[in-house]
Amino acid sequence: MPESVIESGLGDNETLLWAGRPRQGFVFRRGDVFVIPFTVSLIAFPVLVAMAALQEVLENPGHEGILFPILILPFALPGLFLLFAHFLVDSKRRAKTFYGVTNRRMIIVSGIFSRHVKSLNIRTLTDVSLNEKPNGDGTITFGAVDPMSHWFGGAYWPSTPYGVPSFEMVPNVKTVYAQICETQERAWRGD
Image 1 (cartoon, rainbow, N blue to C red):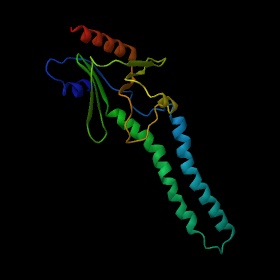
Image 2 (image 1 turned 90 degrees about the horizontal axis):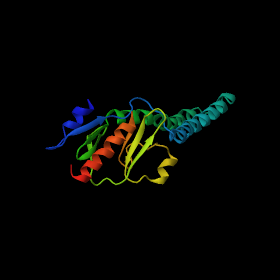
Image 3 (image 1 turned 180 degrees about the horizontal axis):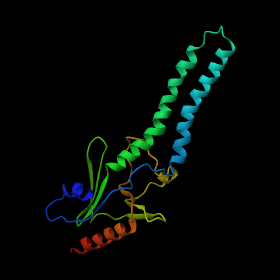
Image 4 (image 1 turned 30 degrees about the vertical axis):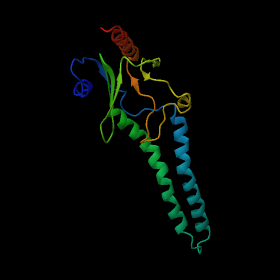
């Protein structure tokens, strides 16, 4: 399937050398160490306030404050949404993402609600980085990486740009990286 998605946008005399996708399904990223506690706090605070208010109402039956615990609970909903939507949006985004390497360019097709195509000319790429995990999966980054991005370990806010173009969570990433380097060398030589 990645081949058909990428091939549909190829130009004349352009050859697809590799096509793939990021790892599919739910993924726990390093940055989730920050995201999960934040969203849990968004949930916990209104729930604890509502429980304290409810306890006050139960201890003082004549008290008319039953409305407050009911009104405060909806403030936990954004936290619940963020906690679960974060993983759902990330999974859906990767399910709709395809990567391609041609003899002329790197192609990233993505987008949940609309199709976005990012194309990087193979001859003008100067900074191509490989980050490989022990299991062989990894990320190939095209361009300079923002040093602050490592603080959040791949976490992102839904609907924001994802920063530097990259092939993320690619299986057998070293083979893909070697293909890109070889293709660059051929392009620079004029083959």
